[in-house]
Length: 343
Image (cartoon, rainbow, N blue to C red):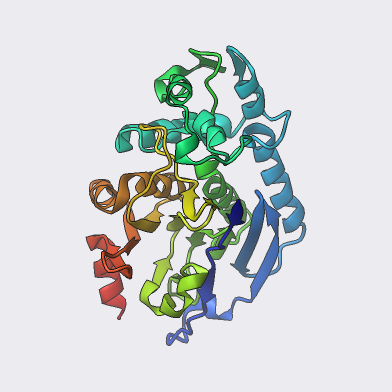
């Protein structure tokens, strides 16, 4: 059995400004980086250096993890998953907003995104379980697990979060990094640094501008396609616009030459296999972009395009496996117009 992980690299492209009167040109750029949510974070902001920023960022993310990290045994979500009935959310700040977003995305995607997918994630070995092949699937066992999947099995009433069945579990990791990006972006705005770029594990949000122009990010392809990187293009982020990418080459395992990606279809219970290699979603905030990027991977190229084109404020940049084994790019009309205007 072979494990493989390819890192999606998003490079910042510094663009010079031709407008010498832009006040941002005279603001110094400062950076901060560290570890967060099982990955890295990188922050670039314009203006005077902020004292104590690292401690503030760590405090924010620690508070999030104590509520929503399934890898923290005493977190609220871990206690909910272990409980046969539910937990109180009294005193929490982040759980309800993430659950509200999840409910919206579940409805918009027909369940292609569903945070109650956790038992299936574990069954396929992307959580606490062992990796398995399709031939190792026990249909009766899988169907029994699927009885615990469905957002209607979870109810939030006041501070009380309850479940209909004891086996129901939540996994909100699909929007975790994006939500963390939003938290840090708000922190920078509150501390008087509206012009910034925040990146957690490749999920990004651009606050304000850099030198009067959008922050720009370039999408890197899987390592085996690095020679095709120019085909991926660059995307603009400004005024709070956010980008999140989900890709089947980011988290997978191989057994007997067969690849199993981390994309689980909540509606079938199986690992989803379609021609969509990656989905980069632009949205007004990063948590939203993150959740919809996950849904796109389940829906496939055609379904993802229909979804993104049908929701105001969303745009998408899809990398699709072509019939000849190559790669093609599909872009939503709104983003295509923006890219053409900047050429």
